[in-house]
Image 1 (cartoon, rainbow, N blue to C red):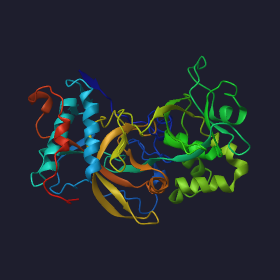
Image 2 (cartoon, rainbow, N blue to C red):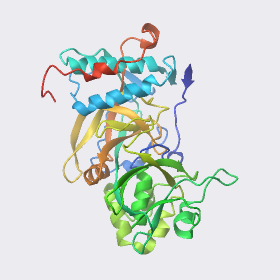
Image 3 (cartoon, rainbow, N blue to C red):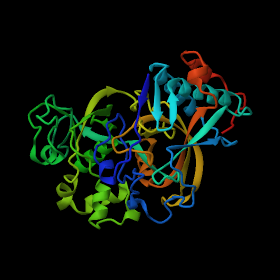
Image 4 (spheres, rainbow, N blue to C red):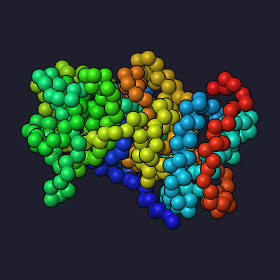
Length: 411
């Protein structure tokens, strides 16, 4: 069974057209995903873009694996176990045609087996090949943003302070398959009286950023915490607030971040409706999960899970990533290699020029996610041999990942 996934080559406007349909949503304020049209809103000083890199005309460029893979901590092994569970739910014969590169579920499993052997014996180089992603500009430059799970203080019932609802998805859309717009819901009461309220927060802006994240922890007045997960969207086009504020010359593109947007909205309370309503897309929530879960329906691992466009990078893939290294003020001071797991997706993560790196839960994760907007490079790791042709159909053994590493403290 082969899924032919055409390469996405949209313009910037198309890239911004949908809110991320997934369990954990990206912190995406700037999106530059077209190879036909480079998004110059990302052209700020020291953005990490390598303009001297070799230009190619293929989605992936096959390369040798670097001899010094970054050794991850134990949480990466946990993430690999979840990756195995996801892949074992898929037909082994399934494959994805990514332009000239064909990737099968069996190959994704084989890559995990190779990496697991290396984790248990790091002196043995894994039998993997690195396929570099073309990036936004065909030079391998991939924007790496960050997302996180916020913790929001809420109440079960509305009062004078906690009066902004977080909603479940309505049962019936209109004749276009849409639900009311953001302005209609948040400012005109379009969902009032339908019993869709899950909880009430003290800030409409906090609600908006929870929508952007797509999922988050809420904490009620009695200390009870509950994870609200992605429960659907209203079907309206997504419009980035960061892009809107840049175009209006309210915030310089070099300064755009979650923090700067929040501060601008705090400083201009009389314009909150005007600006929030420029993004008509709206996200609804579902209840019941205890851990943040991505589009692969497995728990996300802080600093190792990533959201990708599955038509470019299959869910279940292992990525070698050159991620931005930032100082305490968010300035780029270099790059470092890191292994990431493709476990999530997003409507605003489109094409080969953008991935979203999961930072975790809470305020520290929010701070780090808000600083990420720079460029790095991404390689899809696959076995040297075509595993879908040479290996029998089998489920990966989760026990292999639980072996004790023979070298303690090797990080």
